[in-house]
Length: 116
Image (tube, rainbow, N blue to C red):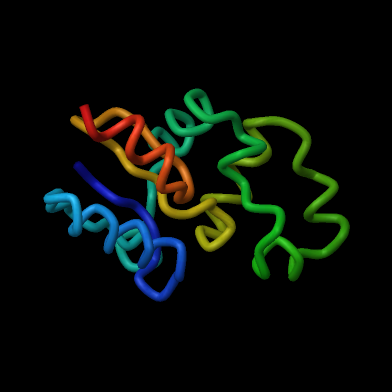
C-alpha cells in the first residue's frame, strides 16, 4: 500500500492516522519531494476522473491565473497542470498493490474498500 500526498496536508494526516489505527503500514510518497510521473497521473485520472484528481478547491488552483485555469479542459490539459503544480493534486491517493483504490479521505469509504 502506498499513500501519495504531502506530509503537512490535514487530510493526508487523517488518512495516515486511520490506516495506522487499523493495522496498515503504508509507504508514504511525498510528491512535493519525489515528484510524480505523467503515467501515474494518467492512471489516477483514468480511475477517478481528472475532475476528481484536480483539486479546484485548493489554494494552488485558486492562485493560478484565469488563463491557466481556462486551459484545463480535459485530462490531457489537467495532467500538464498537475505535473507543473503537484499541490493541485487531490490528496491523499491510496494505491493497493500498485492500483489506485482511494482518493481523499472518508472513513466510511476506507472501511468499505480496505476492511474485508
